[in-house]
Image 1 (tube, rainbow, N blue to C red):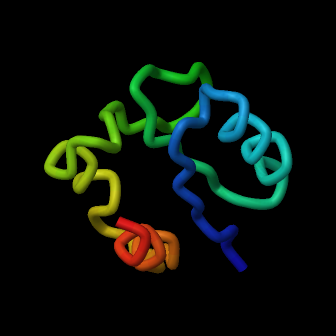
Image 2: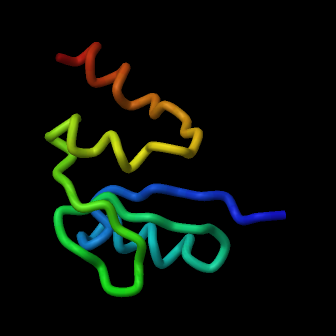
Image 3: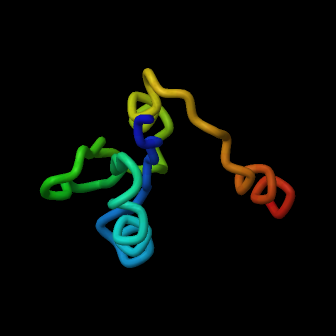
Length: 75
């Protein structure tokens, strides 16, 4: 069975880097980041630019994050 793919935003930061260390042995990871990460498939873009990040999701099904709905409720 193939590893599941996970797209991690901000992988060069403290939180995203921690997620990478916890998951890299069991999953195929990709980064959505503002800068390249050596040895990691990376789509370079800011998450603030929707049109720039959409290509990172092309070709693979993904689950919608529940956080967006909560953020709209708080807004």
